[in-house]
Image (cartoon, rainbow, N blue to C red; front, side, top):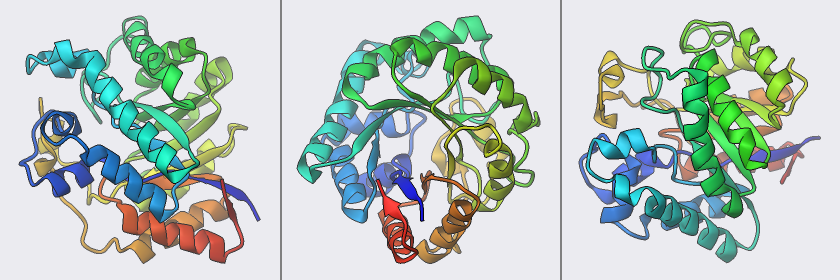
Amino acid sequence: MAQISLLDGGMGQELVARSGDAPSPLWATRVMLDHPGLVRAIHDDYFAAGATIATTNTYAIHHDRLLRFGLDDQFTALHMAALEAAKAARATHGSGRIAGSIGPLVATYRDDVVLPVDEAAPKVAEVAQLLAPHVDFILLETLSTVAQAEGALKGAVQAGLPVWLSVSVHDRQGHLLRSGEPLEDLRRLVETYQPAAVLANCSVPEAMGDALAVLGSFGKPFGAYANGFTHISDGFLADAPTVAELTHRHDLTPEKYADSAMGWVAQGATIVGGCCDVGPAHIAELARQLKAAGHGIA
């Protein structure tokens, strides 16, 4: 039986649901200003569910996002608020690791606004170096093109911490990035930048098996954490979208999600968890199934 790293689930959707606020283009970032303590409560719930990793609520804290709303002066303060929430939850729980999340620059899922590698790298490096003293590793999330992945890796490795690379794949052809590029094209980046793990995230669970068949051949620990959306709509690919543009599945029960994730473990994945619309109940059921199958959770 394997030792499994159990990531937490989605943060943004939980924040929208619990805050009662209408989603905004700033998504989960605004909530930290309007509802202090809510991020900490969600981290607490994921640890209680069995997760061993808290992913910081820093995914979308980029200058390009904040400038649109006159909040760029809060860049460092927002990062610190997110970090303190994760650290406090871990301290109360008594164990666990903290993943410093860095999402895509400019926009998520889009391949038409990707910055050149040498322009993206210093922007990512700034965030990675801000996170580094407070986290166990950097988690690059939801990267959708090869160039986007390279810019993120080139910047993140400068912080001197292990880096986990996670990419978003096509919902119907999991061996492709959302850009349509083959996952196989990431092999060069893995060899060059030596991330500590490679993952797929924020795609439907049904796409992950094909993604892992490729990622598992890169010679690194690998895994997946899927979302609970039916698909990524055209509306969400517009400028400054909100999560109201996304359609939520009603069939993805905790049991069904955990069944999918156990299939990834059967493929050799040693890192599993959840992304958007996958909540504490899903993680709790996944932890239950892992233990029932004899796996360790670390």
